[in-house]
Amino acid sequence: MAPERTPTSSGGSEGAELGRFLRARRTQTTPEQVGLTVGTGLRRTPGLRREELATLSGISIDYYVRLERGKETRPSPSVLDSLARALHLDDREHQHLRELAARAARYAPEPPPPPSRTVRPHLRLLLEAMRPNPAYVVSRSMDLLAWNPGGLALYAGLEDWPAKQRNLARYFFLHPAARELFPDWDTLVRSCVSRLRATAGTAPDAPDLTNLVGELLLKSPDFAGLWERYEVTGLKTGHKTFRHPHVGTISLVPQSMHLEGTPGQRLGVYTAEPGTPDHDALLLLDMTASQPAPHVAPSDPDSSRRQH
View (cartoon, rainbow, N blue to C red):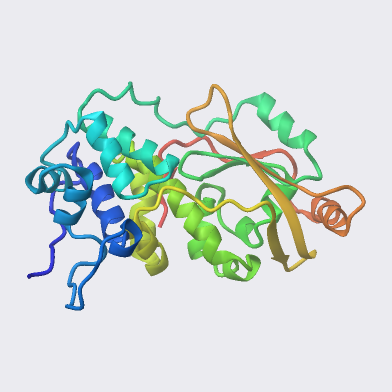
C-alpha cells in the first residue's frame, strides 16, 4: 500500500482547516488507543488509516476522504460527534472540531471585530494596582500591548526588543534567553502553540495570526514541528518556575483571563504568597525594573505585519 499523501488545498478554502485538523488527529491516534488489533506487517501510515477511522465513526471511506480533503463542508452534528468519539477528542478538541465545521459550512457566527492594539485607560490603572505582581495585557496573537514593571521584566531580555516586536510566542521560540528562563520550556511552548492553533483555526486568514505563524514557521523548526501536530488543548500547570538572571529561581501562580469588551485581549498576572521568598523576589523585580508603569505599546494595528 502506498503511503497516504497530505491533502492539497488552498489555505483560504473553508473546508481545508477542518480537513487539516482531522488528519492531524488521525495520524496521531494509534490503533491500540482505539482498540484495534494490528498485524505484524509494516504500517506505512502514521496513526490510523482513513478507512479505519471511517469504520470506527460509522461513515463511508469516500465521505471521510472528502472531509479530510476539504471537499465536504457540511458534516452533520452526529458525524462530528462520531468522529470525536472515534478519535478520543477531549472537550476542547471536540468544540474546536464543531467550530471548524461551522465555519466550513458558512453558518458560523459573525467574525469578531478586527484586533486592536489600543488598551483602555482603566486597564492601565489595573496593571498599576497589581504591583508588585507582574501583569500585562496581550492580544489574541500574543502581542504584548501593555505591562507594569514586573510584567515586562519577568521575561528576561524582552525589554531589549522594540515595543512593536514584543510578542510572547516570538519570545518563547526566538529569544535566546527563553530556554534558560523556563525549566519546563517544552511544556510551555506546546501550550503556546496549542493556543495559537485554536485561535487561528477559526480565523485562518487573519493577518495578525498568519504573519506571526508564518514568521515562526520560517525561523523556528521547533515551532514548525508543534504546529504540524495541530494540538488545541494546552497543558495546564498550577505553578510556573522562572530561573531569572536578576532575582534567582522563583515559583509563581499564573492566571489569565479574557477582558470583556476587547477584541480578544487577555490579562495575564503572576502572584506569590506574601511573606515568602518568591514574593520578596517579586518586590525586588518590581523595584529594579527599568520601565515605568504602566507602559503601553504603540497602537499600530499593522505592526505585526512588519516583524522579522
